Amino acid sequence: GAINTTNSAKSVSLTLDAASSWTVTADSYLTTLSDATGISGTSITNIYGNGHTVYYFSSANPSLGGKTYSLNGGGVLKPVQ
Figure (cartoon, rainbow, N blue to C red):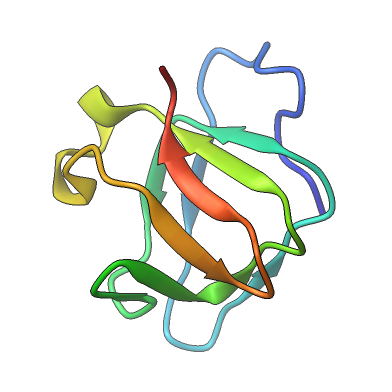
C-alpha cells in the first residue's frame, strides 16, 4: 500500500520486524522508519518499492544517516530534501 502520499500527515511511523514486509504502491512519506532486520548495506530487503520512492525525515532517523537506499523490486528510500 501507500502511506501519506501527499506528505500532509503530522507524523507517520512505520516499524517492520523480521517477519514483516511492505509492498509500496505509490510514493510515500514517513516521519520515522524502524527496520532493524531489513537494512543491509545500502539496500532494504523487506520493502518492495515497485519503482516508487519512499521519503523519510533525516532528523527523525539518525540511524539512516541521510543516505539513499535501494528497495527490492526497484525504487528507493531517500531523505526528504
